[in-house]
Structures are given as structure tokens and as C-alpha cells.
Image (cartoon, rainbow, N blue to C red; front, top):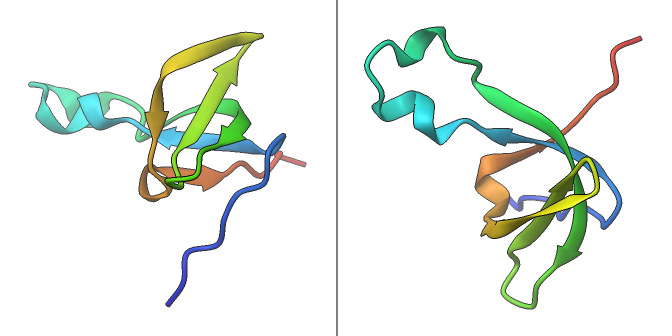
Length: 71
């Protein structure tokens, strides 16, 4: 089972990790975004941006999923 790479420029959602360790976290959204993939590093980490502002942190593929635009 191979996880597919997400191409640069694709829209993705990021898993809300804060939700897991906060009291009352069940009411928070499971996924945040959408974000735009700006770069995939050699180590397979993803750089994201939202609203033209790049996030400082890089993210592993396991906490991202492709964003599907609602019809």
C-alpha cells in the first residue's frame, strides 16, 4: 500500500491535531483548510500556504488529504 504524492499547486486539507489533545476538542473541525501545496521537500515533507501566506511548519503526507471542491 503506497500513499500517493500530492503535486505542487494542489489544494489539500490538514488534519486538526489540536483537536485531539484539547478538552472539548470533539466539537472542533477534523480538517482545516484548504491550503495550497507550494513545495515538496526531498524528505517528502510538504510546505503549504493559505491566502498567499506560507506556513512556517512542514507537514507529513499522513496528515494531509486532497481537497475535493464541493459541487
